[in-house]
Length: 306
Image 1: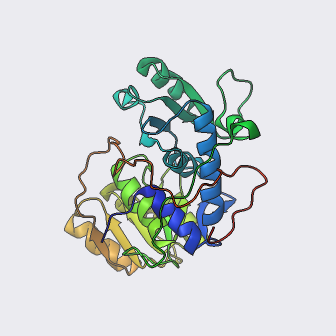
Image 2: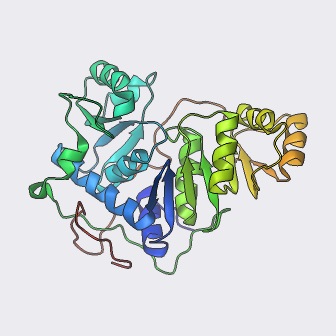
Image 3: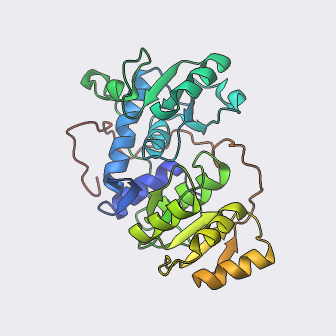
């Protein structure tokens, strides 16, 4: 099977699962059609900021819906998206610019200054700021550029351990390798729903799992232990169809977890314990185009199959 680029994964699910909720972030519920449209709109803003084919866009953001919007927006603009952390300034040094979520603006300023790259913000405005906002650049009609969807094979249905009815808890950092591969790309490839949790605690995770009827959990050993601790004394627990750990769990922890939650725990293949975010799973170059099409911004409606 030919490997799909992350951009093609989202574009394909926007065609096949247009009305399915792709991301839940608090009260926000974004469908696949909406997410792909918003990502392409952000791609317009990145182009207006000077990003060109083959450039690198560094991204500093927690687990919020703006993360996939910017990540796939960079890919739609023909760039390479590289999530960075506050301790990984070297990853941003070769970037055309850094996009920072407003909740992490102080850290973004430091990374921008140390790496010597321009800074853009994304997310809710938090008072006056001299830093340009990606949303403002994306909302200028004169900056619309002609981009097309990546080539899609309408007969292709990517293999996945998930299905379109699954609801996945996105508590792993989306900027890390494990979070990108199993939570972000894996969920979107299957057309499932990703429920975001920006700050993990056992009680908060269980409450969110029950409220959103989560069926799949990906986590580290520490997260599994925290869920077990939080489950003590609770009558209602989430019905987890499948769980994936980044590394083999200690036998006693694995046994207690599978018994308590009546589920199975698999180990992700090819994953290590490093928490330092690296480059995307695959460097994405501009996809071959099937037709000319403008990036969508405000007022444009996504039509299934276009």
